[in-house]
Image (tube, rainbow, N blue to C red):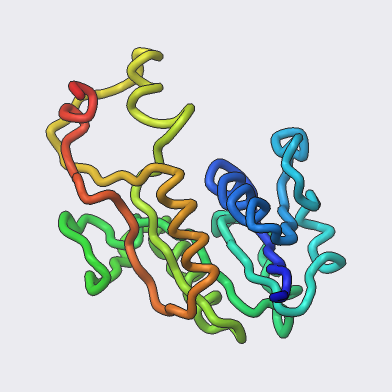
Length: 202
């Protein structure tokens, strides 16, 4: 019988909830941080506030980090010498105005959002754990995306190409990333970039 997986999700929101459910279905022990415990009602995980993190970090944890760079500055401190693996959900914003992106595309620190994301990425990549950076494109799924903004009358048609990723696909990527030893930084998106007009028409 193998060792029970011990998962920590920092910022258990739209994507994190789905990752938590995937690991809970495997029988893993899941600890999740949130600012609003009511949002995670029914999730069979250990729900904690970020301030309680030092008391709940255990050696060998696999950590999914999806808290934006404006989170607590000492967030990673309790994980040092404890976390085995850390996967960070960053953003394709680090590529600036690049129109075609792959894993070899240079980052662009020309904007403040990109700079703060890259600073967070570096802190994670330089940590004492095995690390992988995922840079998701726009995340869509139930309750979020063009299908929702159209119904609200808020969608703006454009012929500018965009890439997206379904939240369930991103959750699958996150699961695979936590269980792998792959390192580096990779954009993650679907394989059908198209204009917002085409998405709305579809």
